[in-house]
Length: 114
Image 1: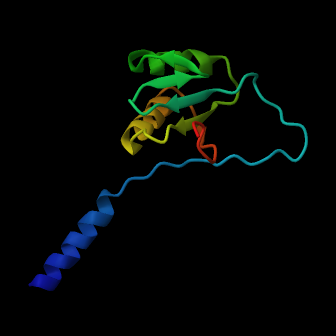
Image 2: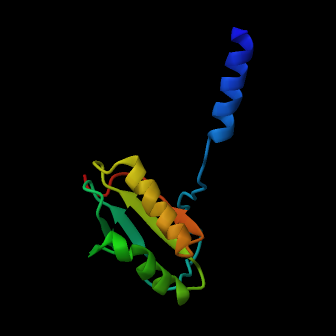
């Protein structure tokens, strides 16, 4: 009886697991071609956002990213979380970016706010 309960619990835990694909940056071997200014979304410790170092309200983050992505061939951004930012607030920002049309989210190594 206990064995079957453990197996069912284990299978239920596996089926609920969710994931998000991310791409870590790779240095260019030659000349890097881009659509202009890189887009960087920072998630601060209080859950607020910076878009290329400019504050942006959470209510307009999606619409702002949608507008930027409309004119870009490559729908790439970098996402950086402040050391005090919660994982949930960073994942929420990633979800917002994906819903705004971003196809690749890179996560730069290291801490931007050392």
